[in-house]
Image (cartoon, rainbow, N blue to C red; front, side, top):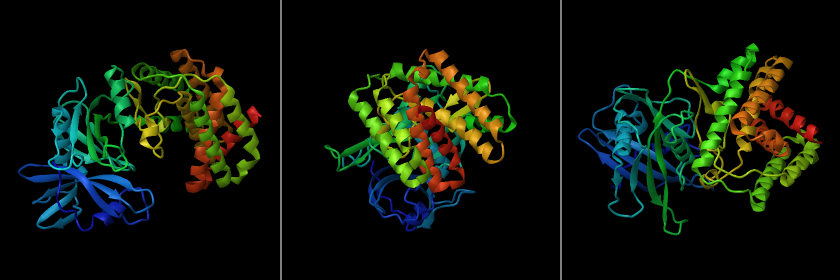
Length: 452
């Protein structure tokens, strides 16, 4: 059903203070374009779709709120208006229960009025067991989305990711992880289900956009991400080659399953031209922001040109933003891969396109360099760099052994993708952490000189 609940007077101020709000430093200019609602004897849940026009690029946000006549214990409301307490629904356990119910029941909310204003559909992962929430809490520190950790009556907790910025098209985080889990693989958490919604979009032929609103999966408690595990190893000089090799094998497993489940296509000349053009655009941006890279411009460009003329493997679905922070070390299970959303700055339509698996390989190689580089910045020196070299080599060995794809035979391509990733990092560090700029710049220099 549609929602006509009043928005709290201070909603703009509250949104501007949230980590997931993208236009930092701006005051939201909100236009409600739709939403959906449900209620029971003790509360109302209203999910609002709010178009924010605070800057030149409008962003559509999903803002679910709960409205209660009695306050929740130990939860700060957004507002207390009209005799009701209004909460960020993600902090209200009843909201988490409602989302899981919609998934389990594969509920379909048909809109009462506009055909695009409220359609909501739940999807249950085949074979997923019913879960019963006993308590929930918002995961701290996340930026672009909101994740709710739900303690349940049996088994591992469940994590529900609520997508804050809405985009037309299937979210690859939902689609790819669900497909890998359905294939029977344990290299991703078990999927529980997802929710899709519709909203008005004048830019589409039928005036309706469709996208994912939420995704639930198994939450693995008491684990460390691979970044922390690798960083500790680099700091202490611990041999990491066996674990890096296993991570290469896990990465190959992910690529194999995605290649089997989704379409794999030969790379056309147009595909190659588009990817190389993107690399060169990033090179221009990086040299403008990091002038010390100008001396390597010609060498880098020659790497990109060599990649253009090299043999290209087929394109397929990939992770898209692959690094050590996207992997968990799970006792008795090995490496588990998360967060298949792709690069956050890319449009959803681009993140769902087939790509080259070497992009993921290059991303992980850069991540090993970052672990060692962060240690070197604190005085770790040559030992950390030697650690990174051994870890990189073992990762590639594991990937080749499991996949049968000798990525070293595609050295020209791999170098190009690694440089491209390092250029992205250089721009980020120049803008946010200039003390770290030497990590990507050193890698760019090494790769450019080797190819020069």
